[in-house]
Amino acid sequence: MNFKKIYALGLRHLYLIMNSFPRVLDLIYWPTVQIFLWGFISKFFTLNSEYYNNTVGIILTAAILYDFLFRASISFNIMFLEEIWSRNFTNLFIAPIKISEIIAAITLTAILRTLIGLVPAVLITIPLFGVSILKLGIPLIFLLLALYLFGITLGLLVTSGLLRYGPSFENIAWATLFFLAPLGCIYYPIEILPDFLQIIAKLLPLVHIFEEMRNILMTGLVDYMNIIKSIFISIIYFSFGIMIFYISYFGAKKRGTLINMGE
Figure (cartoon, rainbow, N blue to C red):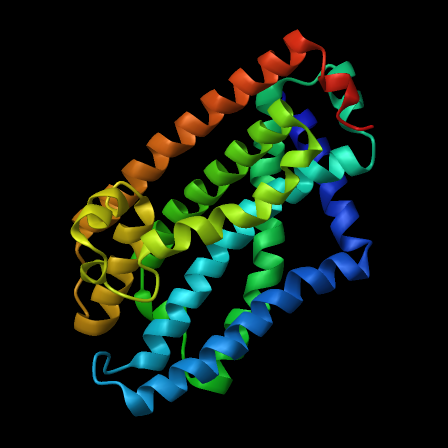
């Protein structure tokens, strides 16, 4: 794997972002709106709910972590789609660049897109709502790692669909996380779900991540088993996502459809 090629691919996407005000505005706008929306909703629940003793903190922290997951996944998809929209997709495979280098470049650059949008929103919550995700302490690093790996996995699966079915699969990129959100138990405990759905939900890293987030904020204690489970499951899904991506790529190459992706 050539790190200079990975750096060059990543730098191309970084230039696209930093030299386009609409792109930067889009990255910052949606997370900020999310924080405002959930901030005021959670303040309302504070006055009308007895379940959480810190409703604003818990719901806003959940919203921030969920947005981190959403941004990681969408950033991966967008950078892949940028290559298609700019008709540069075929050029990538003509150039002496390995698939692993393309995946590595997009994966590493996606974190920059994610942070550009998320950091301003996180900073707003501190003075406006008195909430900081830093209260999670050291476990926050591992929770974000598990979220990022799972977000990139979803991005890999969507791009695999793009390779297999073409740009018509693009709409799935926006729907994937909304489909999984109810099973992720982002804003409520897993006990809310019916028993058969709880079994399915536990196969996702999201449940263990958000259950642990609530556990830390409500009790001040850390259950490292939940953190280990979330990272372990995320790594399994990430490995599966890479495998599916390679299968889709070689399938598209065999069918000769790669050359039409940018058309």
